[in-house]
Image (cartoon, rainbow, N blue to C red):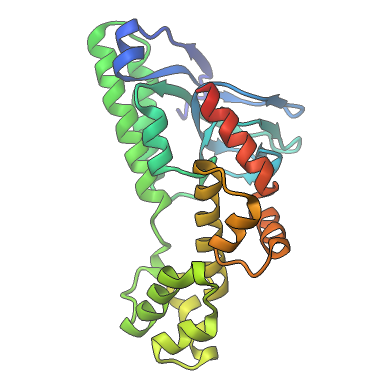
Length: 286
């Protein structure tokens, strides 16, 4: 890709591929203009973007995130999304729009959030190589190429899953058993309004020492970790149940509806009701 030969392919999957395989729909390599801006409400597929140079922004459900060189972004196109380039340094990217049999179920299990951003260079050699192979292999319309592309798309998603779950190198050291006790306490009791004091006691450490050590070994504070557990649990209930939002708040360990609403807005950029509506709509249209 260093030759800067920009292109875009629009693929025509066979009926067999659409019914049985993972298949590409659109893919390419391009540089956006300084004034580039685009938005879409709904498209029945997923997209993976890999930023090779330049900068820009991406939003899903009106929650903006900055994209920089080396970033990889996987997202659900069934939700409202937008792109815009940095006018001073517009981004250049490779991209693949894809879908396939059982894709929805796989993505819900592996990537339950609407978007997954892999910052920097983590794993880029692997998934960049695989993405290039998909773009090249997908040019052919024969059955053999479609089968190989199916394998490559699955391989790319596996690589993205691996690196989306990988901790930075300085956090890969073995975790002290005491901290693991505290972390597991939060895992098991977050829905019962567990607090950091109780987690520190479960770890057998003082409150402040527990906070310092937890952040050192896990990269986030115990409070942030506990909040992520609560929000993740709440999102699953919102998507897969008809429970009232106040019931979701209580079942996820929040002290009040207002505390839940405020925290949810801070983390997801939308209200719990809006989050449920968009996910229900996307599931209905898929």
